[in-house]
Image (cartoon, rainbow, N blue to C red):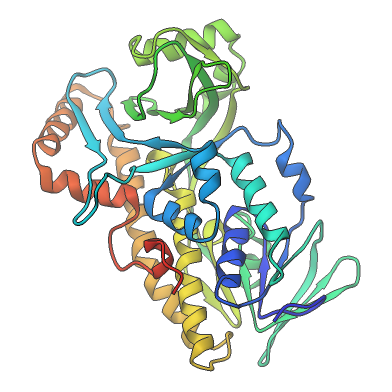
Length: 414
């Protein structure tokens, strides 16, 4: 059900996760209203957000099931291998894409896509989907959650109603705060320097994760530029106090620092997008549900970008919540029934908590100084490289294919 002022689900936040959730629900005949504070067109501007995301293979299956396969094929770059090392030390863990049982060819470990391209594709799809109504730009002055449903009063006086509300409004979710849901949170003494690089040698679909004392240095393969230059996305973690100095390096100085950390692996490097610093932090909501309210994505959790899993956790939230609400609707339940929210929370908390713990532990462990610790890290890397079962387990986590998957993450519209 979707009309001018009511729907089955009210989604607060029209970012990547919010719009994906709306499309997933619509594919199962559940209507939604998506309220987004910003003008969607502003998110598509050339200079708005130069970041790119690694779409894990399970997340990619969902996007294909929702009709976004053309985007992945046209603008995405498959990740065929992930290489992990401590700096330029020759001990490297290699995770290769491998064909699973009954598969004729290997599924990529992930697909790199520019955030702006993904936003554009989602917006186009949303605007073509009758069961989704995007209300933007708009802000919610008041959200009332009661025994029979939710009602949102917008700043312009309009009122929207639904059976249940979903908070997809990011790390600083005002919806979560108004519901009194507390966070476990802390800041890392580091910032991520994000940019886009052109380089002389091809990346061959290899993602690099090199650990330096200041933090991980990740180079992620992107589709070549139209002029034939090879391209990769950079996520370089530095001490927070050094971030401004790194951002203010001139083009030559910045490129020289990148080349030094790569040991010349990709040849001559040039930055083709401004370097932007993002302070790093961690947060996890004490609970994902309140009366007729469910948290997804960054409203529920935010992790260190060390393994590129942040967006994927949000997409897995969307796939799981869709399955829970669809099963509830088919059983004749009120979509705001607390049992549905509790089922979603049980299903997602284990994966989100484990991933958050793993990324936090890795970030801290690889940041420890001293020769004995470096020797231990190198020994550990060598041990994992020689243990195929461990490598397969890590690869499954990177793909997002571990654990109990809802149908969408298997590429199915149940």
